[in-house]
Length: 68
Image (cartoon, rainbow, N blue to C red; front, side):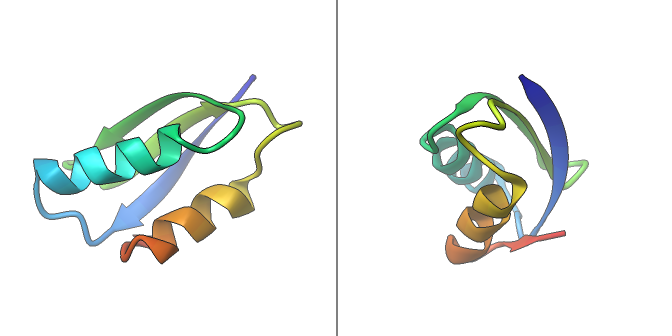
């Protein structure tokens, strides 16, 4: 397992946090997700054989937020 922190721009409330969390948790290979509104980031623990950083940033961007 690896863990990465990705910035998420555009979250304004806990509903946004929940949306991002659920989106990332649904991706193959993701074991754990912690999204912080205050920090504006998502910490993702994942299996690098099944998921990549590009998968996470694409999903965040497609959901209407901006990864950074």
